Amino acid sequence: MSGHSKWSKIKRKKGALDAKRSNIFSRLAKEITVAVKEGGISDPAMNARLRIAVLNAKGQNMPKDNIDRAISKGEKDGNDLEEIFLEGYGIGRVAVFVECLSDNNNRTVADIRHIFTKRGGSLTTKGSLNFIFDRKGVFSISIQPGINLDDLELELIESGAEEIEIEEDLIIVTTATEDFGKFNKKLEDLKIEPQKAELQRLSRVDKRLQVSEAKIILRMIEELEDNEDVQNVYHNLEMTDELEMALEEQ
Image 1 (cartoon, rainbow, N blue to C red):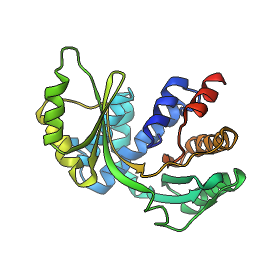
Image 2: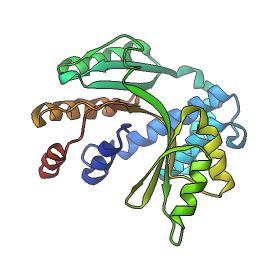
Image 3: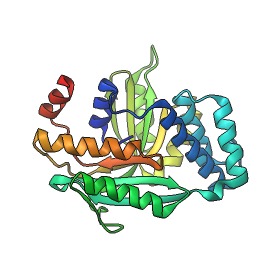
């Protein structure tokens, strides 16, 4: 669930560092629950955050019963969950931003600090990574057969797209945070349902490490993503060709 596009591509290739499906469903369920709590409305048509959370859950083939249970939980006891943002550095001064949803703040902070420390890193103060990461809207759109990509690209640019990338069978669109809702509405008008739509933290400058050190960072990211309270992990490790090759050989 990293915000680094090349890292995401590596994970799709390898699969070895992806969270187990049960963990993915748990994270999606938490986001749905909090969306109900924050929006105060359990109808996706009237709650933008919930609508996007449900869309992302469907994109991961989460069963409808699981989605309905998460919505129901938000109506009853969603107040148990709190958003926690933790920032820190791994070895080589690689910046790592961790987004959590937890019912126990002290436990979550202690667990995340332990993972950082074990891998030679440390947590920093809130806001210390603001100069490294920008928060952006990121949309993943399937390329449909027969679509005119040039015409679609013009439509997307006019709707607030800052950057458009083609990755195999996907169009990855980046928008400003303030344009996230407007862009999502435009996709609805065009009858385009993205595979995923979310706010991510994208690094401005990546950090290059030797392969041996980079592997330690990747191991730390894997351990963070395995934690049940962690929703997303963002970093600025540069995924070099050399590192990609080393991962392919594992």
